[in-house]
Structure formats: C-alpha cells, structure tokens
Length: 164
Image 1 (cartoon, rainbow, N blue to C red):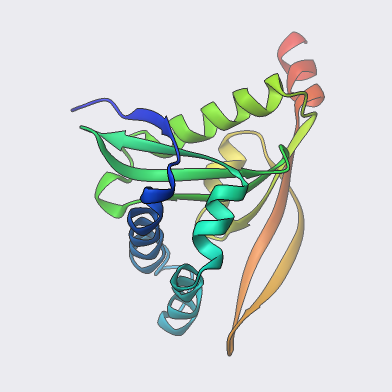
Image 2 (image 1 turned 90 degrees about the vertical axis):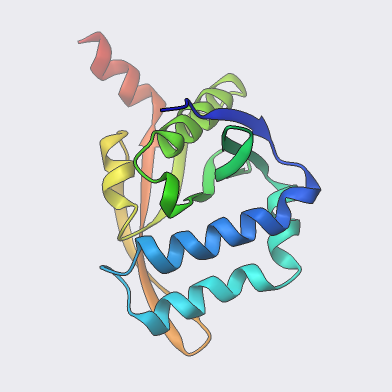
C-alpha cells in the first residue's frame, strides 16, 4: 500500500478538488444525509467561490502516487474549513495525515485552539482527535437544511492531559 504524500494547494488543483469534494459528499455521507441534502451540499463546489475559498485559506493536499486524493483547508489559523477525502482513498490514512499536518502548522503559528463545523459523518473523526462538541447547527443550502456540530480542540487542555 503506497504511503500518502503531502503538498500545498495550487490554483490548477481547483477542478480536481471540486471532484474529490463532490464524490466524498455523495458517497461517504449517504448514511447521515438524504440524497436531496447531499445534492444541495455538492452544489457549493460549482461556483467561483470554491476555488477562491481554497486559495484564501491554507490548503494542503494528500496525494497517492502523485495524484490528489484529499484536501484540508485552514481558515484564520484556527478553523478547519474543509476536509474531504475521495471515497476510493477513504480509510487509508490521508485524512489523518492532512489533519495532523494542519494541526502542527496551526500550533507552530501560535494557535491555541482549532474549531470545525463537522458533518454528522465527520464528527467521530474529530472526536477521536480530541475535539469536543460545542453546539449543533442547522445550515440552509438552497431548499435543504443540513445539521452539523461546531467542535473545538483547545491545545492547552490537550497538553495538560498528556502531562498528568
């Protein structure tokens, strides 16, 4: 099994990342969201705001054999804005590698915490990494409503737990 690689986002990656985003939403979240909800969700990658969002944030890509298979985006050095892995690469460590890299970068840049608005599908991933639920949210996308959970990980608390 090849080991995932890591590299920064380049503007020409936008189309590939939109495809990863859409495949991830449509295939990996079907147990938690209806087809209509998932279709409304994937439409977010169809306009000009998606590549701009990737470029404005710190975005890293996971690659397998040189091809992008996932990405993570950090907004304002404290908010995990996007984390998506292609279904064909799910469970192979790309998501964990992406998260670990972004946490390390955020800490190096002085962040005291990370937050994320995690889908119901992604919530266990973030809980496993020390994130604590703060509140439930309802997001309107077109004619659909999607639920997610704002979660937070404070670095001081994580450090205190490892010392005791």
